[in-house]
Image (cartoon, rainbow, N blue to C red):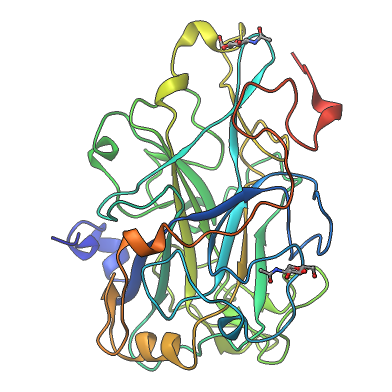
Length: 350
Ligand SMILES: *[C@@H]1O[C@H](CO)[C@@H](O)[C@H](O)[C@H]1NC(C)=O
Ligand SMILES: *[C@@H]1O[C@H](CO)[C@@H](O)[C@H](O)[C@H]1NC(C)=O
C-alpha cells in the first residue's frame, strides 16, 4: 500500500495546511555525467558530476522550449513527465585520500527503479497553483555554502541518517524533524543509508521562464521558505504566482562505507559532494520543466496523490529504466579515484 504521510506528520504541521494534492513518484537515472545545461550550458565537461533523471531530451545545453516535444522517453513513471531533474553526487573519501562514488538506492515504496530521484509536487489543494510553462527552469541551493541557514523546519536542504534497514523506520516529513534531519552530512555511520532532500521555492514572478542566476524568477513566501508539503505561505508582490512545490529525495547507499577504520583519523565524517563540499550545506538541485500539455496542471487541480492520477498514465520501471542518454564525458566515475572529477585542485586534501 502507498504510504500515508498525513497520519504521521506532527499535528502542528497538519494544522498548517499540509497538502492533500501531492504527486510522489520515482525517476531512474538516465545518466551520471559531468554536464550541467542549466548552470554551465555547453560545457563538456562541466565543473562537477551530476546524477540526472527524466526525459531523454537532456543534453549539455537545452533550448528554452517545450522539451516534452523533444524527448521520446522518460525515466519517470508518469508517461507525461519528460522534465529533467538533477543533483550533485555524493562520494566517499577514504582515509588514504581516494574517492569512490556512493550509489543511489531505491526509496521507500517506489519500486524497482535504477537509483535516481524521488520527485514530489505539492499544492495546498485543488486549483491553488499555476503549473510551470514550457521552457521553465530553476535552481535551488548554494554550491558555495559551507554554513547552516538555521531555518529550523523551513530548511530547504537536509540529510537524514537512516539508522537501520528499511529506511530506519522513519521516512516522514523531510527536513522537519530536528531530531533526525541535519543541514550537514550526518556525523555518524548510517547503516540504512543517507537521504538527501532538496526543496524548491513556491512563488514565481509570473513572467520569466528563467533568469541569469536561475533563481531570481522564483522566491519564497514572505514568512520564509515553505516547509515540505506546506504550500500555503503568502507570496511576495514581486512573485505573486503560487507554483507547485517541487521536492527531490535521493537515498545514498552508504552501506559499503560505514567502517570507522576507513574514516578520517580525526573522526570526521567521510562523505563529500561532487562539488568538493565536505559539509553538505552546499547541496543543490536543478529543474527543467517538461510535462506534456496541461498534464501537471491537471494533476494539481484534481487532488492527485502519490504515484498515480486519474487522467494521466504511468509506465513500469522496465520501461523507465530503459530510457537513458549517452554519456558525454568519458571518464571513470565508478572506480577508486585520486581526485573528484573536475576537482583536481582538491586532490588528497587530508
Ligand atoms: C545534443 O546536442 C548535440 C549538439 O548540439 C546534438 O548534436 C545532439 O543531437 C543532441 N542530442 C540530443 C539527444 O538531443
Ligand atoms: C584507499 O582505500 C580504499 C579503502 O580502503 C581502498 O579500496 C583503495 O584501494 C585505497 N587506494 C589506494 C590508492 O591505496
